[in-house]
Image (cartoon, rainbow, N blue to C red; front, side):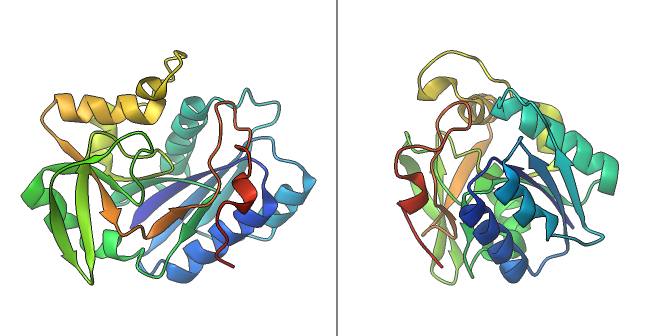
Length: 225
C-alpha cells in the first residue's frame, strides 16, 4: 500500500484533473490524504465529491500557505488516519498522472535496492540537470539521477522520511533554499541518490510561486483533458 499526501490550493480545473487521473491510473492499493489549503468554494466543491474509505479530506483554514508545514502536517495525518503502508508519496493538485504512472510504483523496490535511490519522482527539480547514466525501468521509461527532484512528486520508503524529514522551509530566496531541494540534499550528503522518471509520467501542469499563488499562465501551461 502507498500513502499519498496531496496539497490543494485553489485551481479547481487542475484539482479535478489531478484527482481523476490519480484514481484512474493508480492500480496499486493506496490511501489519499488531501490537505485543502484554504481553497475557495469552487475547489472545495470539487473536493467534496471525492469520497471513499481510503480518502481523508482535511481543511486548513486561514493558512499561512507554507508548503513545508502543510506537507509535514499531511504526512503526520496520513499515518494517523491510515497507518503506514509500504510507501509514502507527496503530490500537488497541479499534477496529471499519466497511464505509465504505475511504472514508478510497480518497479520501485528493485530500483531502490540495487541503485541506492532513496527518493524518486515524476519530475526533476526545475533548476537542476541530470547526472550519471540513466537506469532503464522498462516500457521505454528510465530513471535519471538529479541533485534534486520536485516536491510535487516524491516517492519514498517511510524510513527515508523518518531519517531525513520533516521538510524545512528555510525562508531564504533562491532555488537552493526550497524545502524539496534541502530534503534531497540531506539524502545526497548521506550517500543516497534521488532521481526522476523520464519521460515524465507525472506531469506538472501549473507551477506555483512561494506562498501558493499560481505562476503567470499556470492554468494554461499544459492541458491534458
